Image (cartoon, rainbow, N blue to C red):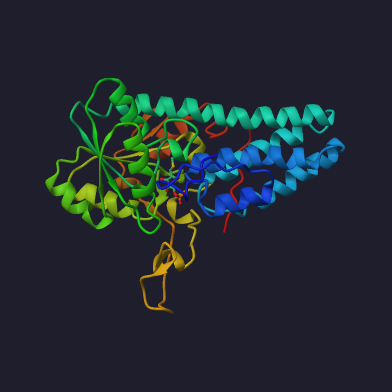
Length: 348
Ligand code: MRU
């Protein structure tokens, strides 16, 4: 996979050979973005089982459990991580009676299915989301919810790619996204690579841009969406949503249903990752704040459902009240991983 920490300076691919290296890659954001984390974790489970072979199926299954427990500690907010690990655990549990080679095949098939489903979900979100965009529109986005964050078109950027394919002219303002600059490093890079008209701004410029630059819509991704529609996404998203409401600009969240967490009633229950103070006090290894200053570094925030105009998932454009529309979208069971049992939520 692409080492996202090296972009935009270099396009370098990482070769992951063990679960420890994958844990570090997720923790340090070499691989990041909710769907991409889930896919990487699923493939990590396959690596764990392959590395444990040759062994009995029971031993391979034990390696899967240990790897899933370990990878679940890498990052707490994106539910796609736990969703993918639970899918892999279920396949392992259902394959206990099989020969070791078949057990390994079943795991690999499930991981690749998770990846392929993501490609299809991105396409579908692009199709549904593009109905919200007209020729000449300008979209503001925050963080990176594009191809780099998924295995396909991305979530928030998918409608932009699709609209362009449909011949619509769409331009984009990308928030740089402090502190780790996913907007500047990744969104600006991937949109430019795709030939999209993108303008980079500092986060603090978003209000001015909304007031003066004719923003038609805000489109962002999500790391976890609670049953009532409250949405965790990269820190700063809540501020952007508040500004969008103040300027009567529609605010859209785009996320596959693997990002829904029906076990949480509302956003206050979503675990928010806090990261090290260096991410605020240093730029590229150099300090830009007084040594020893107190810091607070939440990596995500929660946008209340009332600020969200619509949530676009692979099933369509969902409108409030989200308590009903989210569940209806993943009917018949109301479970986001149908036909399997509800996801288990871990994290701090
Ligand atoms: O800390 P990151 O870079 O993993 O945060 C990523 C985001 O907040 C994305 O917007 C979200 O995961 C959606 S990606 C399709």
